[in-house]
Length: 203
Image: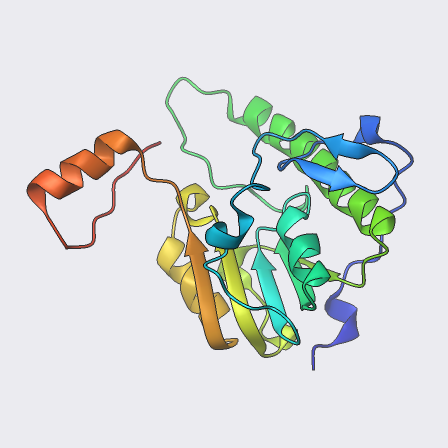
């Protein structure tokens, strides 16, 4: 089992105004809180129809926690893994970008997303635990998990293969990878390389 020192201490968050929600979520005591993405209608398909009851699950890139709390409600013991404002985000260093401003905006955004996670954690009376870090240095002390979940995470990463490698060395049964593919690039794939894997750089 994982070393308890790995886990972040719960954060006391006083109100929704201190939060940013990555996913829309039905929050006890508040009703629907709207986020950037709404996965509620097709959640079962999004998670590949996998059964979570009695499973230890690693939610990679948990953000404000929607998937964590949904899987927990289905009987999973969930470890949420994500960045905090202390860790760098992978972003493309465009020549005309102000790196310091981008970093400052990221830290503020990540802090607010972390706040949303802890606000929901309290509202759901969750037992999920959190490990903060980067996918490139995911600690083996998390211990074995039955299922690892990558919910639209790989598209954000400089090295998606290393992220998968680090999570899968802990995973005993199943990995769920859900990602975005635009209609344009799907059409190109079907025309050029039917039935073969493809990666496209979209900075």
